Length: 323
Image (cartoon, rainbow, N blue to C red; front, side, top):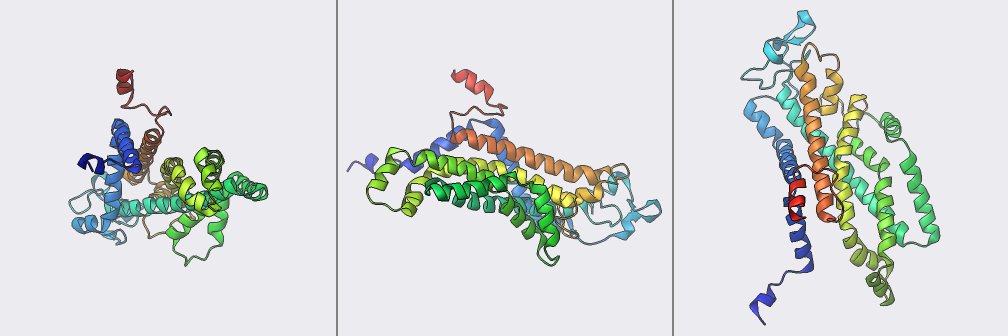
């Protein structure tokens, strides 16, 4: 056999190569990917970074705040110094850099865990509805419609209020978001499954005697990978925002655990006396959501080149040149 023939790329390898080539053509998506990678690295390396700074997110420093002025940090720019790189928190004197990097762990971890739960439930329900009989489809579709119609924040607030306080709060937030907001994923997967099961290769597998579970595992799930990955990439920034909103309303992550949303809750009365306490978590939240949104759009476009990108930053000139 010819040596070149033995090394011909398989279908999966071709798909992956094509995806990376299309993604590299989008400069905005590449920049967003770098930003997301740096954020994840900061979150994972939070203990190391705070050890280098010589701080931790829970230690109080009462000597660094002016109690006569209501707890405003002593010094310029919120108490920035060689020991406290971003200053200290009003009233407590906790190090802001340490709380910011540890807050990244909570915000990103909760969002990713909630997305995994949403994807799992959405794929299971969507595929079951798409390949099931008429009664199964109707039952699961109506249940999905109910979940989509339920107000996420109101239901999440109710569920968070009845759970005992001893339950780990980040885990609870991720579970509540994932268990409440899987409906849209299920509807997308069901629609794709209904379309895919009418294709010739699925019909051939059915005629050859394959069972429903085997058809779903071998034929449908690989074809569903692109839309599922695309929508999951767009769910992460949404879940970060929801976690921040729940923490801001006081039912999310509780002190002393650091979270960007929880930091914003405490900062709403300090935007004049200590503006960095509000601007730092708000800026981190904005950059993270923006980077994940741009990256999600880039993944969507790379997986489906027929769809025009909603965000044309860094891609318009190349498209015009190719045309």
